[in-house]
Structures are given as structure tokens and as C-alpha cells.
Amino acid sequence: LDYSLRRWEALTRYLVDGHVPIDNNWLENQIRPWAISRSNWLFAGSLRAGQRAAAIMSLIRTAQLNGHDPYVYLKDVLNRLPTHRADDIAALLPHRWAPAAT
Image (cartoon, rainbow, N blue to C red):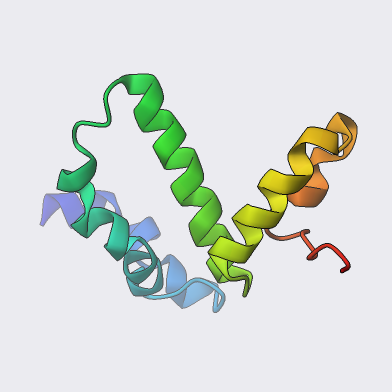
């Protein structure tokens, strides 16, 4: 009971601001595939390899959330990277990416 009382303002925030959801089910569902597979990635090889895996998984999920096929997105971005201007790298992020004109 003490735990709830000390956090009462945060627990009732959704009543004051209609934009705040009552729960975080949407987010929980978004990360479920990664949480389920966590044991598969337990031994990525090293901390650095784990960080790289997390970065690529983040790109894949962000591409999906932006309506892109992750395979098409990654293939296009990896093909463009060697010749893409470094100061415009943000254009290749999933929320700004557009497929290359063919």
C-alpha cells in the first residue's frame, strides 16, 4: 500500500492527461519478439557484438513500425552507405528513408 501511495501521482497521470495510456500494453507487444528470443542472443560473443546486434534489431523494428519491409530497407541502405554523404546519414534512418528510384 505504501508503494502505491508514494507513486500516486504517477499512477493517476492518465486521468489528468488523455494522451497518456492507462497501461503500456502496446509497447510490451512491440518488444515481445525480442524478449522471447533473449535467451537465443545471450552469447553474442562479446559486449560489442551484443551492442551491434541491438542496433540492428532496433533498425529492423523501427523499419517495420514505419511500414517498410526490413529486408528491402536494410538491403537498400547497405547498398547506399559506401557512397552516401556522411552529413546526410539521417536520410537513411527508417522514419526518413525512401526507396531508391529504379
